[in-house]
Amino acid sequence: MNTSDKKHNSHTPDNWDEFRPETLLFATEICMMNRDTKVIGAEDNGGYGSLAGTIVGFIIMALLLGLFQFIDQIQAPPQNTFKDYAPWKSTRIAPVTQVAVGPPTPSKPAVVAAPPKPPAPKPEEIQERPKTEEATKTKVEAEAGAAEAAARAEQEAKAAEEAARAEQEAKAAEEAARAEQEAKAAEEAARAEEEARAAEAAARAKEEARIKEAELAAANHRADILNTVKSWAKAWSDQRVDEYIDSYTADFKPQQYKNREYWEAQRRKRLSKPSSISIQLSNIQVSLAKDGTATATFVQIYKSPTFSDNVRKTLILRQESGGWKISSETSKKL
View (tube, rainbow, N blue to C red):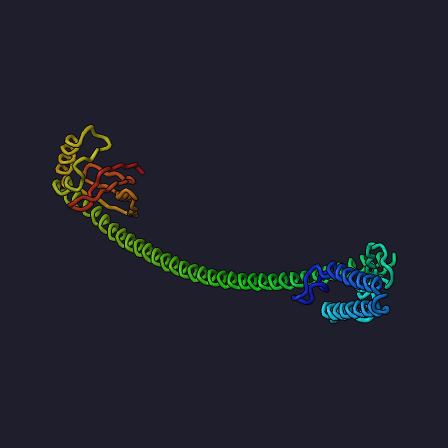
């Protein structure tokens, strides 16, 4: 009987098993003393006193035994079977059954039967139990690991799917941005090309206009230069000395004279002396230079009553406020 069996009834003391044998022994001693006392006085009442004392002692003992059985029934757990109840009951009535009715005998220590031990497990059961527990534990751990691995795999699959979707969206956004950038670049290139073409056309038109203007100016200049050369020859032929001298620039450097003053004096003398002068020009060619000067080349035939010659003359003309004037003159005999 375990501790829970003893304390089944809260009104039963915890030391009831120690208290009950002492009570039975005390009741038995009372019965024996009563019996002995009555036996001593049996001669006076014919022996009935001894029988009455014995009967009273047994009645007291029977009452005590009934009381003890009632207490045992209260203490016994409701789940005890008859098989479990027998050894338990033997531990409690053993002190009573060991008391013999008769002459007093020396008391002996009460022997309490030990509760039966459960059968020892078999060696194979001892070996199989850890294996079964270990297998169960291994199985549970394997199932938990498999579930965790499955959850991890599902989570990784979701993460991979999200990553793939994000990568696809990033690629789509990148392609859209690239396409938009390429479209803008193509538009900018087309606009730049159109602007360049327009600028080139404008520059070409401007250049053409400039060339035309230059050509027109050159043509005008050629006409002016041609008129200047003809006017110079006419003034020489007509012996208009001042008009002839005025056809040259102030810094004119003559070819065969040391300075302009001496040249001018000689030209005035030569133009005034002959009675007549004839100047004929042929094959006149006029060209313009980038420095703003012009060159006139022609064949000149000079005739006077006293002298005549035929030369190729080159005049360098420069434009001044009054028009084109001769800044240099060279001639070569033909």
